[in-house]
Length: 262
Image 1: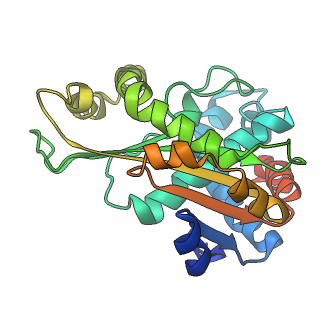
Image 2: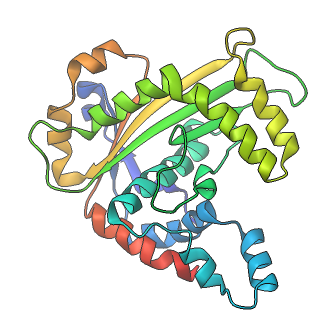
């Protein structure tokens, strides 16, 4: 499988002029879907869990088990697409040093409900058995917009506003949630390691928060033009990414159609 980032190219000129990291989709949509299918299926259910279900259940097929975990509503497909794409992009590139990478979508109680806490959270723990000031937490707030634009709307504003909430409140609330979920999965070592991030005041670590908007490419300039410049100026330390993708809605619809067959 090709790396996800290989389907995108940075628009250096636009990134410099607008203060937004613009990565334009330059690949083939059908090839992108095929390269993403297995990754996205694994975001919902692991190979190990699938095998266990098929072996133990007399009535559930592999396809059934996958389909039950997928959202049915288009708006929720879009939301999951943004979260999963961001997860893989950041683990491949911008947060490749993270070594605790929870796939939160596996823990959703209902496929058409949002996952708890921040969209994506990735953790770097330098030493397994004790804390370091070089430990790091990454969060990514993602927004996907493929519909006709509303007057004055920008998914860049929505994403940055969400990233500010991650920074001020949601990241801290997500840590105990991760601990609980790892405990329920019997991953007690991971639960212990995540607890290290529960007290940033007395045991500090590095925090990096990101915002990403994934939009229909024909609307990208409008998202940039409508971006709340005051909000941007007030939060200069939160990197903001824009991923324009042509035929975005068809791409993620085709991807979700193919996931059950993986």
